[in-house]
Image 1 (cartoon, helix red, strand yellow):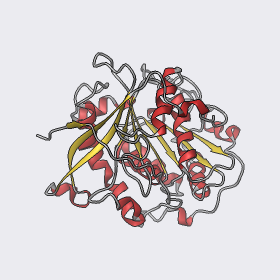
Image 2 (image 1 turned 90 degrees about the vertical axis):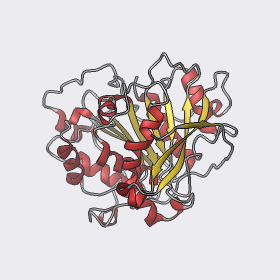
Image 3 (image 1 turned 120 degrees about the horizontal axis):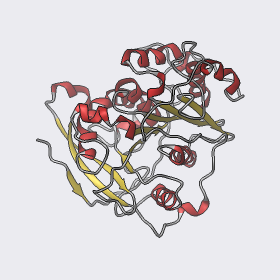
Length: 357
């Protein structure tokens, strides 16, 4: 059996993801390299609503997010970057997995870690939703939250947002798709392959390590247990982390309800994305995608092009709406936003202020 080891650690690296504007693979030639730049105007909600004129069935279950996303991205309050009086805890969770390229052979064991955020007042008597947050290029598992000894400023944002009631008390997990070296994420072609393979480690190793250690909605960490608790699980990422988010949507729709990609696309083919849903057997109201990017981000055009292509699918697989009762796809853009950590945190913050409320 694999052993999950909680260790206090000390290694700080605060480098935000970069470099994945056009991220399609040779496997499907529907990449952003084939996509024309999207227009400057926002997705037209009136046009998108044509897809939802039919009767809308409200998804049942206490975990469905009832509120609506904002019309514009909210800035993170400046005082949220300072320490809160109610501080959550960072821990280092170590777990065993297998080398990514030969994962199915399960011959080469790797020892990896994730940085886990536990909210202020965390209790084993309370069940928590889990937000998996993946880094981008030139980064690792410490990029967004830091380490127990040297927390990063996004940890303060979580603390203050939860203390003010803007964010639900949740568990946040920062893993890495880096494989045999911390420099893997700086190799663009390699990173694309690693993000495509990451679902193996995610489902078989990381989630059992996290949700077998902490109090979540998973009754157990079998595949059935993870599947049955999917409403309480989200995957999010910026840049190459966004590519990892799309790959999680592709391979792990059975195990996640919420997806928050930003500034990193997978394809320009909306029908291909719709086929992922159809092949999974899920319905339109089984998931929600909240996407974001900035107008000065080099990944903006190709990313927005993918969202528009998905919204244009005519069979109702994707329904553009700012809330979960009426749809499953929503996009916000930040005027002047660039491909940087500053805007990545803003996108995460806006999603966190909405989800599970």
